[in-house]
View (cartoon, rainbow, N blue to C red):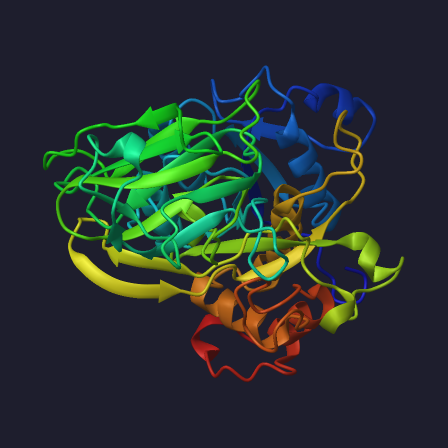
Length: 426
């Protein structure tokens, strides 16, 4: 900030999170200035993760004007709040949530709002998620094409076949208990699924059905089934079975949302963090910087819980078939930092890393108010500290956002080799 004369002046930085319950207390302690809260959208009462998120943005861009709206209630309300924040002039928007029923293979209402906000000039940052990744052995998702085999005897009357997860395995064992729901989605368009799949939870010996989701898909329903594995249930050792009731074979996404599965793949990130316009932000423990600057490389891996990509997409927003593989996450940033908000000292998770990236983006927007999402993406790709696999990868994207290097790039062009000169000025 001192070297480059940036502090976020003239930029509106906006947060979508649960609530700002602790806002007045944190303001009284001098850790936050005035915050503009959309009318009726404080989210109170809740944990006040929103207040902690605002603190991080403010710490990086202390002169930026702060706005807030909750993501609580419904996906439709969150989408409305995204658009309302952009209409209020928000230059940078950050959130730290994904709804469990957001579409995996198609951009639904929230992802569409993200893309609309970025098309209108905002830079949008979203937490990649804290549900694990394949490389660290913490994956709780399985993606793959449906390959039907004979159902176990207990489901012989309920299915024409069940998913073969590999080597003839007709179930996927839960090795770490999911904290909440388990979801199943497949490649039919939203509101247009005519292929009927069901999800069953069986005990370890496959002699008892513990839970099930058997909604009908008759041509106008969503391709979604979900079961509750949250407290007080401990489903460690129990088995998930994906069953076909009728229809064609489809590509599947089985997600334990923070649990772990015996058969797992990459592709944890879903919903609006996977939108084209969103910067999905992975988490890197600030302690790995050793009290100084991040060095990059193997010294600064993503958190073992940080969600991985890529995001495979099969339908456009209108339900027309497409085939796309989106590189997610896009970038990484610090978590494990201190805030003054009760319950968030330290503040871990990609919920903390996303506002770090957003705060740096506010500094960029001060220097180049017209900076587009594509221009910012080129800058991050060219200047981030590479970690995990060489180059852009499914765990950290381009790497850790480097504030000094990326701001230097927009001011002087040093190291900016993408050629996208339309989006920035020296």
